[in-house]
Amino acid sequence: MSLTDVLVVTHYLIATIFSLTVLLENRNPMKTMGFVLVMYFIPVIGVGIYLLFGQNYRKHKLFSRKGVRDNVLVRAWEEEMMGVIKEVDELASNLLEEKWKVVNVIRNSDKSLLTFRNKAKVLQNGKETFEEILAAIESANHHVHVEYYIVEDDAIGRKFSEALIQKAKEGVQVRFIYDDVGSSGLKKKFLKPMVDAGVEVRPFMPVLFPLLTSRANFRDHRKIVIVDGKVGFLGGINLAARYANLSDDFVYWRDTHFKIEGDAVKSLQLNFLLMWKFVTDQTPEISSAYFPKTEIDDICMMQIAASGPDSDRATIMSAFFTAINSAREEIRITTPYFIPNDEMLMAIQTAALSGVDVKVILPAKSDSRLVQSAVMSYVRELLESGVKVYLYKKGFVHAKTMTIDDRLCTIGTANMDYRSFDINFEINAMVYDEDITSRLRSDFNADLEECIEVKLERWEKRRLRRRLAESLARLVAPLL
Image 1 (tube, rainbow, N blue to C red):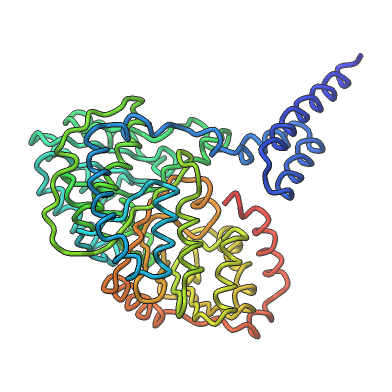
Image 2 (cartoon, rainbow, N blue to C red; image 1 turned 120 degrees about the horizontal axis):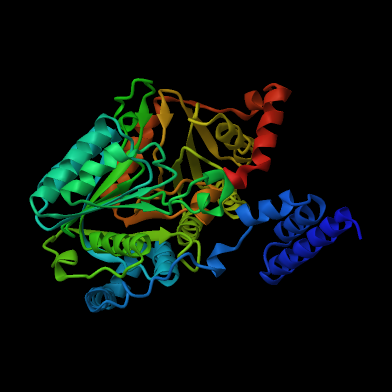
């Protein structure tokens, strides 16, 4: 038997083993057939593609949530919230009507509780966001927890580093998680002063060769800051100068972030502690200072929806899907990366076809040519369904927001794409409040002034070469 014969037999044996694995996972038939064919007919590379992009990580979780959720303080807080929910369950469900289904989806998928005693503020763009976060950090007495996808060694990154170093020197506990791929430009000279000052610094899933490991797929895309368990922040803004429109390579950056005070901060805290457990491989000691008594009297109903390879279901995608299906009058979506899966695209199209007024803002120019081409490949389908599409011309719109009618909105880290729904760790605030929803709708209308509306007749007249490039980009959409 020649070496070639041995290699061929080995290839088909390995391909058969992995094909059986795919078959037993009972996935979408088209996806199953696609991976099987690739593995059999593209030697070596086909199996590599499956290992990189095809594994069902939800059946093989990257880490367990046990330990943190079992903590007596965490369980006490959850039981307290459940008691509040039982008291007002009927009142809240009547008030939210169809939107109550979103509450149940998140609660049953992620065990995330609906909180009531909250005070919230929408933050527009980096300047306002960074000022609010730095002010909160400066006021910290017990702890500062920070978790970011992108941290850069520039004016903003250094300003935050200095703030964290100062608090650590004052005796405040400071924990800092950064994603090793998103923040790949960070060097030891940036991190060492923080470590020397007492900041507990941990990278999320460090990789030596990002393109050669499946761990490049499972990134921590969250942007979270928690101060003393009382104030929390999340949204689309990373720690980099370009988000504050301070970058030398100037492109106007339009983004949205969210400040929370109250019970919802405890949900943010829980998710941070779960991530800290993973990056340190130790269950953190949890004191009452992490879950302080809420002193907020304002009422703003809110849930924190988190999803990632640690969750049983795609919670954020399910919440978006349910929210869109609950719409009666209008839907407003702003997203930088619109590469939806079939289910989400169908939900948006069906809403428009049913008479709901659906408007979507996308960037006219993205930070990635390939991604932008994939995004543009969906525009025709949206227009044909009656969705109104607008391209933001002032700069790059990076905000990730959606409003449904007059009492439901979401702000967070999740894009309307495959990666956010199925691969990365994401976190969003689902807010059931008229005032916050109204504010986001006002921001959306203001952004429309900087947009051009796409018309189907003109869109269909674009050059064949451009349309072909978009269609080709769409083929690799799940990988973008």
